[in-house]
Image (cartoon, one colour):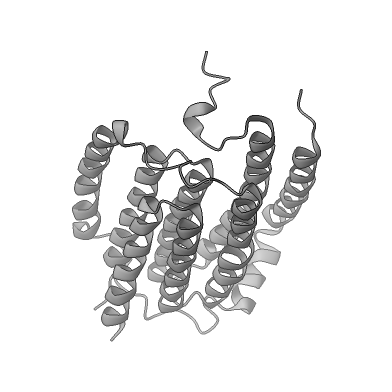
Length: 166
Length: 100
């Protein structure tokens, strides 16, 4: 059953990802990326990461992608801009395809020690309480630094859009 | 039986699709979306290792990656806006001020 769900959403997410990079309109790319993110949220639920699954939909599919869509709408691009550059595509695609062909079988064959289980996770694994406890004890300093980073990004984004460049 | 290798293979495929997108597209917004896709693929790796090793630290890492991705998207898109206002383009081949 889990395997069926995995393969179903794996195929859908790869299809969305491929459509994202071949779509001519940036809006289509953004919508397909939202599709990929929803599929990834399904995988997170399969992997017992309930808080991260919710955050994936709220932060990624909600906030970040809406930001992308707003910018695409604001710029009002002509369709010709940003089409795939075919002249240099072939060589790069070949190189990446070789890389991919080497990587994927390696990933699926290798056995990583200690990863056979997964059934033995505790009851609060991946819940808001579990992750929150970890976040506010062991990772308190990175958590605070992340808040400063977000504030800096906020100020930087406002400053950049207000800036008059000569 | 669902194993970690399924998830690792899937995230490798998604990451490579993101790399292909960054290399082949010229629209800077689509390039940023491909970067987001690569970050998401890495997040999937973190979550699958967290589950199969029974250690929640991976979830905290994904949380931090999300915070950094949000900051990156905000600043990056602000740069795109400034770029478009100044040069009327989002084509990376036509933005080569630092090239020469």
